[in-house]
Length: 328
Image 1 (cartoon, rainbow, N blue to C red):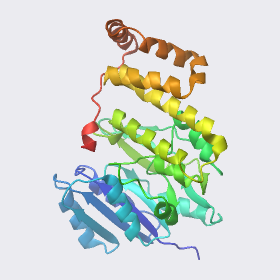
Image 2: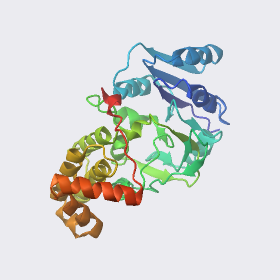
Image 3: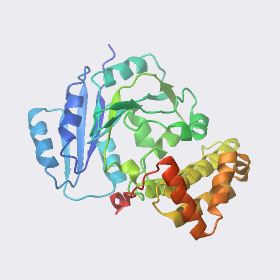
Image 4: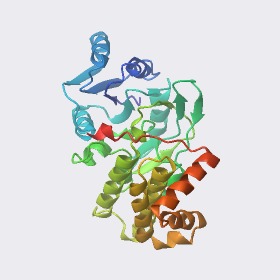
């Protein structure tokens, strides 16, 4: 009988409004052979008290109670190292799983060879104010997936809490502890050795609120660029994929730069990123939208700000503060 242990790692920091839902969504899974490792990264909002009550009631819960906020990469690596399951599934303290998440993905793994390391799929994004759910776009990378991940990043990447992953993937590809957080970079390293299985079934819900870490646009962009440089140096990276990696990084830098301009986060930074993106992969200048924004970045500052204000009014762009304080 196929009954492997699954280690669910919940990463928590000051999410007292949501953490109980996150934990309950794991406890209420239709699959029960679970180990639940809750890593609280120095919360001071009452989250710890909520977690302790759950830990006292269910022996499957391991509570890593850290007194201070520190690098998420370090916390995640530690949780993976002490895990004892055959598979790992990540969850953030403000999100939750649908009841059949683990069982559905294990059913797929049951029929896969050991070179398949990741089962993933789409997920919902739920607005905390309206409770409206929308299906988020994700990559449909399947099989040998490195090239797909490089080429389809702008269309939607892997939902970070959707995958069920063989534990060895995390042990062999630890998060870079020189970074505060790594995000999606680790999946590129998984794809160097393991196949991905895509199943078109939403099994997770990520909440949309004012403090989502994804809103740290500039810092997230810098982290991604760092991870791309590291994967280019990886001994198993196929040299024939170099041009795709360069285009990927150009597209990514362009996207971050454009968001800086569009959302009035940091105009100077946005201009620098857009110009750099053209240097990394000049062929992108043959694309009309890329060329248009690149030419926009060459305007004198006073004209650029005036034009951006006009475009913001016409297209109803919203100013947004980049939440880079998460990285301090």
